[in-house]
Image (cartoon, rainbow, N blue to C red):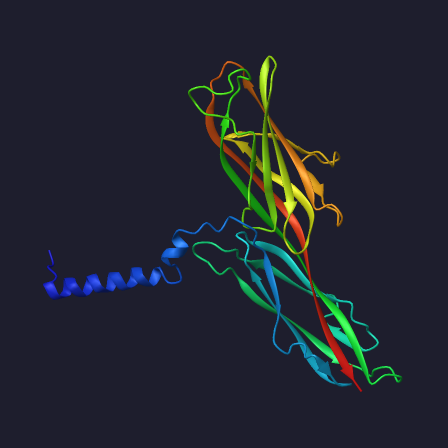
Length: 292
């Protein structure tokens, strides 16, 4: 057996400590205790300084550069960025069809700041109108993407309608929530117990958009009470029970999930979980002036 001298042991110990301290880079004590899946967080869009500049001259080239920083607690996929609203008589923007990005990591213990990327477009200025010394233009940068949100809570189930409170737990009825770390939030859950030969628990989720953009299609990908699946449907859209398309005017929906029980069971606590996939559209306005 090979024996390592005492000084060698100390050296090995120091190396191991350095390795472990290196593995913890970027993770602070505050991050270890922070729950990223709370409140309302979303994709931040910022204009890079002087890109585009506030004013440009005819036949000059310039850039549009946008910083996209995912501050939500969930990954973003299938993203696309395009610039709209610019009059093509005075400006040309390439690529005209916009640009796509595959993936932006959400905030977590291992990535507390979320992913950040820069998206660049090339602009060219033409001549302004002959009757004006300058031509002001407003434009919009539009970001489309897909993401998800997860909801989990511990609730009380009491299958016996006539035993409102027993030695187990008490049903709370309506519970409200501040958000789950995304622009789309489950803001309220109501639990209703129905009588009958078999008791039935009904969970009514109020789902809202609290972000700066617009929600598109929302789809239920998981709904469970403990380890058992729930039967769910959106009340406003009957064609596809577990999917709904939000409108620009109506940015909320009610999802109803049900589960049957034997009527003679006592109350108990269990987990209620819900996962939703959704499409999102975010828009930010900007301006540029063409000088003669």
